[in-house]
Image (cartoon, rainbow, N blue to C red):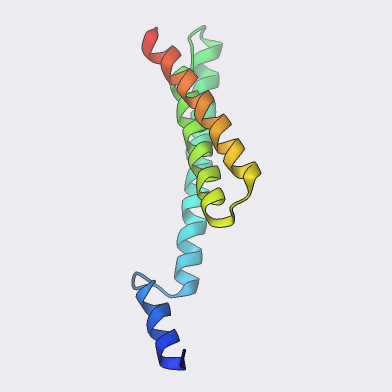
Length: 102
């Protein structure tokens, strides 16, 4: 492969962003996800203190964790990430079922 073919291939895979912009975008999604999970935990604690259940907030957090681990597995093919994604997905499904069933 010559230099121009390599350059064309590299540019075709990008969506109008250079490598730095892609890293910043990835980091912002990570920070946003952490803040969303933190808010869910705070709201869940408030519900639990008031004697209510927090299955809905727990399912949101575990779906976020499952998605994160699934993406990590997709990129790295680490078996531990796949197992963790499956576990978080099951916990999410259980919490969602408890929320929907009452």
